[in-house]
Image (cartoon, rainbow, N blue to C red):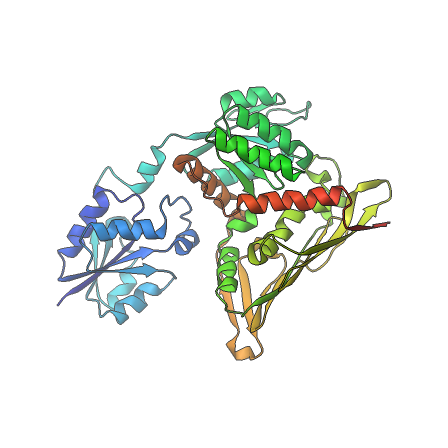
Length: 445
């Protein structure tokens, strides 16, 4: 029996895919099809895959051409699979010609001509482009625009800022200090302005029929956050909380491993996020965010995603600037749960080791600083020989991944966010109570 193996993403399965599988099948008696996993696609730069791994596997299965379907999860797996399954022929499209010649050492390599005029990339690009506007400070516009360029189905066409001295530098983008004008020419907005402006800007956008991706916190009060989600739902719009860490592959994987019991029962989560560069220059709206708003949502993310939002007790301590009791240089919040504890430390004027430690009854997960840009973490045990390290690709700090999730949500009309509405509301609640000085011990410089 001649065994044949081929690999692909098979996103939006089309005639070209089917024709390639038919020709691969004809090369032998038994066809093994490797479908690339979401995480592996990201490491290869494919962040625009529209369908989940399960949807793509089912689509290949429905063709009836695959005798066996496997998942491709890591670099170098092709050699392992060829040896494991005693493969005789490896085949792939001719656009990869020469790329896999090294496999000739293990089996015969055949490059098949692709069907002309059709591809998943073309199908994705044919969809209506979502015209997106950026809202916030000019200092971060270029960064976010560059990240949006990696996502199919979206184009940044305008930017809004209150800076009246703004000079337009790019003829491809409309720059304006008129928010109403921006909303007239876009389908969606990405808000990265000062948190005090989020509620009004989001509400106005939603009432204008625009989808919203907003940097966390969505609002400074829980009731306002709830109201905004209600407006979005009523008008069949997407409102998504933007915490880029949530979309990092490594961070998502460590959550799954922690919840799977790899370190036993979770008894403690400690997250620290600090920076001092913002104190060197206070020239922009974006930079003048206090510690609790700038770093709080990120630090609270693993606590609430691992331990839930139903804590029994919360205590906070903040270190303030003498002339401003709303600008905390450093804040520490302790949480008591029924069977666990947690602490978050955030600072924009105090520097500390920015790591994440998740402690369990069998071991612990350690993420080195800066943990919020997670691309590597370790699971450590009493017996060091059992320790394991995990590495994952992280491009664009996760910004491009959350933009992709946002566009998918708009297209599917259902949220693809890694951040639940409940979590968004709880983040707003914690910040609201901090602003009210509830359960807060204050220290002045």
